[in-house]
Amino acid sequence: MTHDTWSIGELAAGTGVPVKTLRYYSDSGLLPVASRSTGGHRRYGPDAWERIRLIRRLRALDTPIATITQVVTGECSLGELVSSELESVQERLTELRWRQATLMSLDDCTSEERLRRLEILSRVQRLPEAHRRLTDHWYRELSAAMPKRRLDIMIAMLSPSPPQDPDPASALAYAELHLLVATPSFTRWTQDHDEEMRDGPAFYGEIEDAAALTAAALARGLPPGPGDAVNAFVSAHARARRESDTPAFRAYLHALVSRSSGFDPRLERYWALVGTATGGRVLNMTVAHKWLTEGLSISIAATGAASISSNR
Image (tube, rainbow, N blue to C red):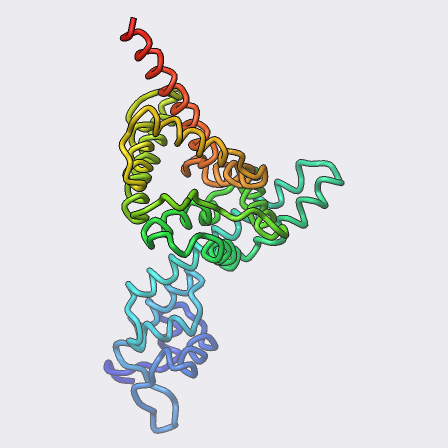
């Protein structure tokens, strides 16, 4: 023996790794042979010691041999391995949390309800695929005339990602979204466009401002009434129709939005489920629409009362 190379037995004695395991590492290309003895036995160089330590540490993390091979041969760095393994673990944790929420949902109900929930929840056990189906549905349904930015915003609202840490209620709500969109003749999302509507992109830009103000008002628990949100809503419609924000226009707009406020109950249910699935992080559009419609009505009444008072 020299101090430049070591036999497999010497490596085993020095590292505590069985000879059989070291031979497997060697045969797999993880532990390169530096040379052969005159008797044909494998001899290993100084780098074998550090290589064995690295392999043992990675194996302690249940890293597959194939992945370790990529690291020791330089196909990927240790940092890249860590990032990849972390992403994989996070995906598995999401799957396990989803499975736990699913089982808890099926556990806490009657036998009849359990069968109904099982049918619904079975639709979404492959989460990426389920999310893609939901997204594809709404891209097909939404107006092709909608500007891309607004379209993407609406798709994100209507097609939320699966809850990352679901409880039974949010898991079931997310699954029921898929049940609704799979229902024949499910009412698609519609926007109010009449022959007077012009400047679609500008309209959508301003209506976004109105939506943001409405969301803020709802988050603060404010009751419907005159204010910035209603004013922005009226302004968007007035500008798109080349009109001015007058009492007459407000009356016309109120009649228009009142006719369209009768959302299909399934669509109203859909927005409620989105709220449950996302923990309330998405604006419920039916609630916002009703809030604005009532606020517009109150603003008209207030304007009328002020006009009567000024004429006395």
